[in-house]
Length: 383
Image (cartoon, rainbow, N blue to C red; front, side, top):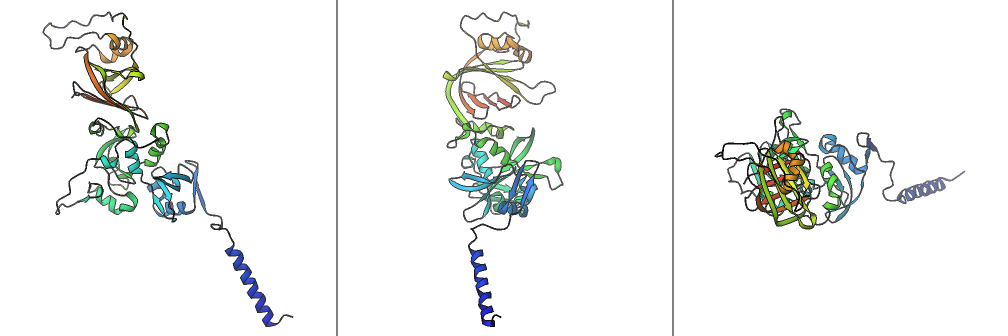
């Protein structure tokens, strides 16, 4: 039989051993963490990121996960992150979960860093329904201001870093505003419902391009002041990663009844002909095509007679020649019709984008053309 003293000593030794074993567990060793997987994308969440996702809005705020949790370098810091359709969640060094600055990154990839955005003037003290943010020089007004305040403010969105603008999203134009961490989109088709204002799919958009070789390196800005016009085209967000630019290259321009042709001599990159077609019946946008200029001196002229018009008519149709003529005769005649002015010599400033697309300004006439990655993304200003 053990004495009471002996039993007490054995119990004490057992407790010490139990506590020692518990303390010897490796840091972070706990019971199996809960995991939640989504067949829609094939990715799972676990641990602190899952907890944050569920407590801060879940699917409607962040969307589905589109990567695994992984180590990435973000703004010179190496962190555990996980990407979602609308966000990138980051585990900071102290364990805090924060949302990534995807609004700022999206603008950076488009070559229009928020620091270079037009700043708005401070508001008079008695201005109602609006708030001026001195940190970024932007104004946020109702109903956008109320949405920002009621849905997380600075923590969820960060500061506004653009004004309101029209952008093409999934083939439709929407009014949007960029914030450090988000893009808010106004969807009038859902007016009166909780979905009238939605978070943009910046996680998908940024992740799709930021690791492309053409998007690596220091941020590049759009050159030659072309952002003043590019910023107004509905497909602006599709023009990603400004790449090579050309100043004052030889160019030519010719107008047709159904569009225009622009010739560019890009030196070692070759000679190109851009064909911009005006909207036709049943279409609501310009379309365009790009051709290599294969014309060589000595090639035969395009032997065709234009339709006859009165001698004093202000427009005298003609048949294009040289490089324009070859492209026209090979098939563009159907879209463009006959030339209505002679070919004009030009010079051009040209900005290309890494994911496709180009913007140019013709220096003699002042005309500007914007061409997106898709054939039906084009805009042209006569002057």
